[in-house]
Length: 60
Ligand SMILES: [Zn+2]
Image (tube, rainbow, N blue to C red):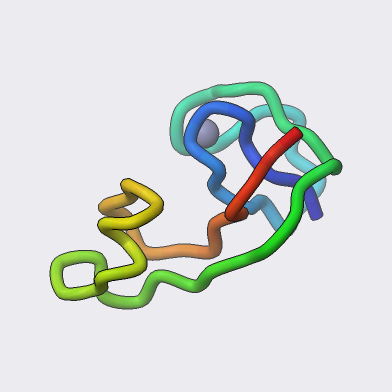
């Protein structure tokens, strides 16, 4: 798996770029949060995302 350097979205397929923002992917990331309900999730606000999915906490 790899994570987007721009929006931290985690891609579980062998994409070359982020399907959300076309950003560059990195396989060096740490932590993972699953956002199921972005509208209500405190974690979603914390990591600044508004789309359901898996997100890395930190991407190098
Ligand atoms: Zn992205």
